[in-house]
Image 1 (cartoon, rainbow, N blue to C red):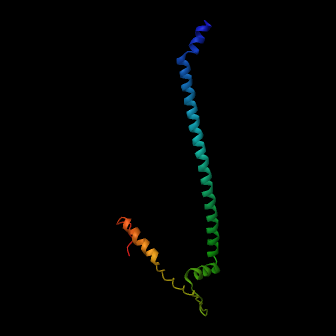
Image 2: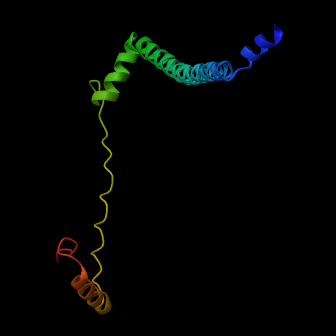
Image 3: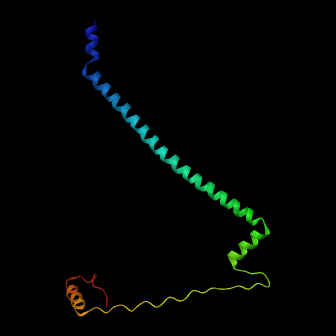
Length: 130
């Protein structure tokens, strides 16, 4: 009786069924692994965003605290609108103007000849306008 049970256990349909089940389990395990890997990346990205937002919050909190004082308001107005108090004078610094760019170089004889010869072989779309 034990041999017929072994024969059924090791028969081709049972072995094929086991292989299919193992394949499905392996596929499911791999998909879970991929999702876990992606989740780990997302957690790292969210942590970076959170840290950046916390830094920005701290900066905005400091700026708000500065604007709560009279000196902070005055400094912000002076910086943004370039205003002065009565009796103060404003000094405007102007940069030197940049020198004009040098004129474009004139192509020499051989460059002109090469351009003329090469323009013969180019299509109409590629020919530069003169």
